[in-house]
Image 1: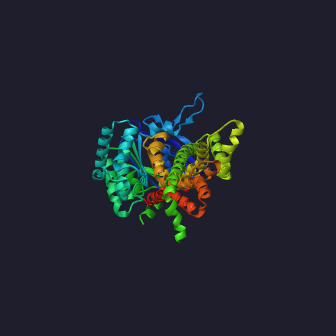
Image 2: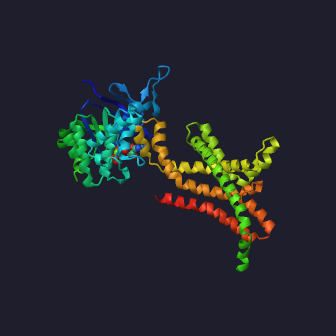
Image 3: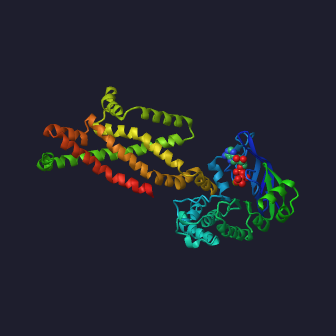
Length: 256
Length: 217
Ligand SMILES: Nc1ncnc2c1ncn2[C@@H]1O[C@H](COP(=O)(O)OP(=O)(O)OP(=O)(O)O)[C@@H](O)[C@H]1O
Ligand SMILES: [Mg+2]
């Protein structure tokens, strides 16, 4: 079976600083992969390269076999990075959940979830609304459909943001530390929703500091440090019996 | 004190319709100039935000020039200067254009600052769901910018309203020019200019209140 997402030789530099130094991995359909690593190791950068919110300096990202963000050059010799406009249909195939939710405050909860279906997937107003209600039900937020995002707790906002990403009917879900901006008592409700999505067989790439959650929900874990994947394997193996000293040190430190 | 108020009792009936007429002229001039300033200002803002260097250079040159030239000089240029090359405006049009050209820079600045107030994540979230940059601007950024700029835009309008008094110097019969004519006619400059000031205040005050209301929310 071929991979849904395959990443080869991914590099990213900011000026002279190389943040990602050659990353390779694959995500098969239905697989859940957790990306862990110390602060500043490049986890967010890596995730944001998947939908080209950051433009990689080098490398090849394929979603369902299709090259993301790059198209062959006009004269056949050099390839060219797509504009945001050209990227839009590819981005629509990946749902992204941000650390700080980024709900749109001028729209109601329902509109936040319905607008992409309406404007990107071109559903009718009624279809978009029905879809949005369905997605809100999935994240247990139907009762706040008409609220403003500003009236919601952080946990509720993040669940709406998840529903917004789901409304894209994405092939792949990208989560960037979805619970690390939340008060501790609100973390659980968001993790529970993500766990339910995992159980539905969705394909997910999840950056997280919730090690126990990664162990229980992810199929595989990648440990990123200094811009390279230091260790990669079955979630339980990497987290309970890490091989690499750097992974061991990181896991030991994060438990306290 | 009785001497001070006495002219109001005596001539109030004559002054009121004249002042109301002039107030209407001032308001009309201000509103039409402001509408035009918003149009020019938006164009200027698009130039500033454009990816084409020539447009950005034009915009920054425009703002620099407008900042450095007094409004009165612009009005004189439009009304007294341009006929020299065969372009003639009536006084009202010249005043409207001059005000609009000068306030366009302020309007663009208000929009630019408003745009800066929108967190970067708003745009990223919009691109992530598959919006094109145009859709992102139309559905996500612009509606939020409009809310942010509402209050400073009203402040800008009030300052334009007050600056519209300079139009009196190119013969627009708005409040100040009307007041000056009345002061000469009645020899009561104190009472008349106080009345003129009150007229400006009456137009401006509701807007000031509104902008404060909008700013709090
Ligand atoms: N726009 C940028 N310009 C310059 N440097 C950047 C930029 N974005 C990130 N970096 C740098 O790249 C490195 C990796 O950042 P990144 O946000 O990917 O780390 P992270 O693993 O997600 O960390 P955290 O756990 O704190 O979120 C950091 O050293 C950061 O300072
Ligand atoms: Mg990060």
